[in-house]
Image (cartoon, rainbow, N blue to C red; front, side):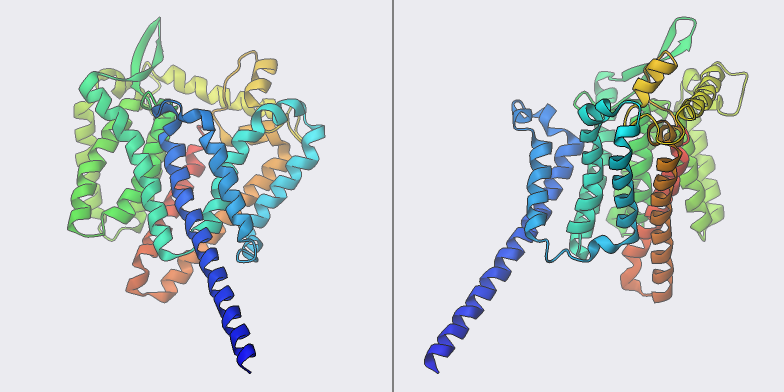
Length: 404
């Protein structure tokens, strides 16, 4: 009997140690993922001398993947989500269609790496962010990174006259545009994209969270909007209008929002230069100097759809849009329309698969929204607001992708 009791105690100790080890691995996965987000968006490899030698992004992806493999028993069943199933269908299609695309070598040599980095965020977030506390930390770190990427070049602009980029006005004239900071890699349109990504999070999560949060919101939001003006990104401006419409649609204080919108427009016009005003007015006025570039962008999109239909079944290959445009249109440029890019690279079959993936996302957001509405509990307010934020971000991306 005594020996059996000792064996039982030893088994309990082993079980406790196993649980402790699993907890440590799980917690380390979360901390490492937060670091990966900071490293990826803030580009430590550029800011810290010698840091890039260790290939930090690749090392973090490999390390997190290994930690998740060690927890594979705990993660069973999570891949049954419809969104995961949709992305797995896309993976299978990419593998099967690879020998049939026009430039499979370019896909393997150049374009798999950025695709894996992008998809890593989907898997790491879904598998690691699994508690209330982790979700709030994850959202906080992500939004902090995006706001920092906006405020850094804005600070450099105000203190040192930094712009980072320019745009051709015609007739040999150029106008300066605010781009990402020297350590960042984003052009003015991409900086505008970062701005309109952060704004819904700030509005839905920061503004309703108390007096201190409101003060922080009032300090950050004008700077974000001013930075957007300096980017002269028309696509980002349209995306902002989408967010504003969704906020207006949800609000119970519509007259206050209309008054606020008028104040913002008047304030924006008062700080814009004539060139900046012309740039934004070109969206609706064909007589402005910027109307020619807006019309050129539209023609370019039509050309991209036509290019995609030259190989309509499986496309030219993942990430090969610049190569396809260089070889068939005579100019090597990125696509200005995500949906055209999908057809160029994945063909109509891949286009349909990706749209199904997007449908699964919006369907999930809609279902979650209905569930929160049914609960009607105050302790669910953060998640309900986050859900509204993600719906706004989704539709903003969907519209922005028409021009980017």
